[in-house]
Length: 233
Image 1 (tube, rainbow, N blue to C red):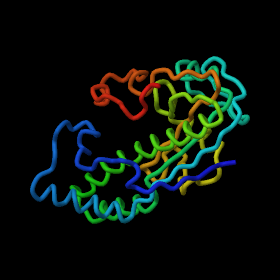
Image 2 (spheres, rainbow, N blue to C red):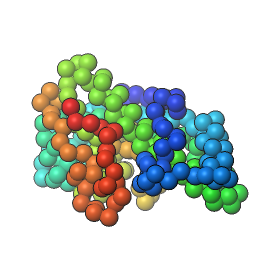
Image 3 (cartoon, helix red, strand yellow):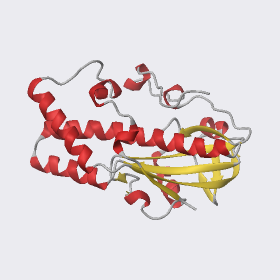
Image 4 (cartoon, helix red, strand yellow):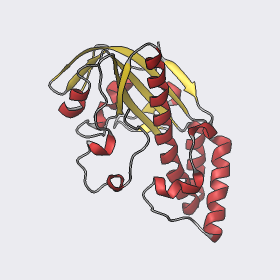
């Protein structure tokens, strides 16, 4: 049975004044009119943004040669990620989003031609989506620990060798339009500021390197930003 959780935006713990550090812009902070525009955007986002995530815990039917079978559906995360999930007894499949209200707000900004505010909103949306993913991970981990199980780190299509095209398999394991999210034919999630992933669950599972530690793309700015969202036990 799937579980949907609505998250108050303030509970995501986003430090809006440090948003630029979160997005690879170092210590840059908008000033003057730019700062006023940025603050206006954040105030509007707080009015319309309704973050949420949906997840379902499903028996893990097997891991073999870079493939993971869950609920009769085969995911293709690649040998590295699949190897981290070999001891998983169950898999939590989840999606999360900044919400349709946030999506509508961004569309209005784009239609208005206000590129500065649209940029600020887009940047904030990326941070919100990552925070929703972290919140979902903590929620799932806490629930499973109550029953004596351990959890892996979360992994998502697009990480390491896992093709984004596998989004369709993630969504096949969840109810239709979970949290109002739909998937396009090309694998794009709408609302755009949405996330998806899986978490391995089991009594003997071990947490192995996460995110940037397993990514082979050396050009990404996150290679130079310490990831503290999912600390190792």
